[in-house]
Image (cartoon, rainbow, N blue to C red; front, top):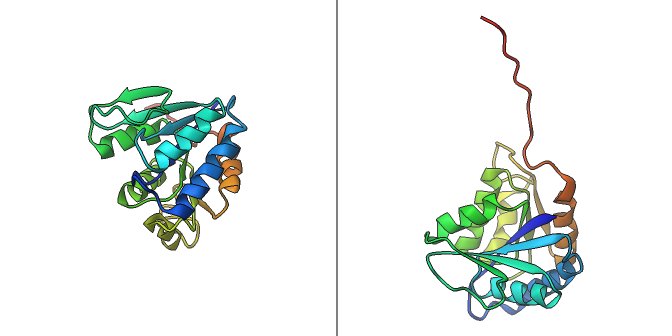
Amino acid sequence: MIQIAIAGSSDEKPLEKAEKKAREFARELGKYKDEVVLLTGGRGGIMKIVSEEFTKAGGVVIGILPERQEGNEFNTVRIKTGMDFAERSAIMINSADVLVVLGGGIGTMTEALMAYDYGIPLIVVTDTGYASDRLELLARDGYFDHKRIVKVEFTSDPRDAVKLALKQRNQPKFKVSTLHLSSV
């Protein structure tokens, strides 16, 4: 089982290109419903669209909600964190095996950078019309900075994003190094 988190705009009426790509992503992901648990911020906009499509396919959606919000009706499980948006995002990202960005503004971009900083594999769907499309400019060599924590994958095709996310199923989440102790 793989836990795939998504980040996307909470706009009540998302941009048309982003909405289309979100639906396509969720429908493709739905083909793997028995292998995937979907994690979202649990609210509206892109999160709601993906949750709706994934639950229609029979998938399980865990909405990790800020404060004590109810979230959208397509959350299979609601986790009301009692925390602000950034703290809620940290829980979602730390619980994910991979984060897929489906178009959004500052909150979405913050989640992308947080995932990178935490070493969580990151896939960004581009050509959505949202500011998150510009994340590719920050990662010209595939990394957001000199630390090269985790390679960031970019694709304009939401079906490719699903394939890239599913590749993380069998990947170790953290690199393990051996520590040698000498006796004193």
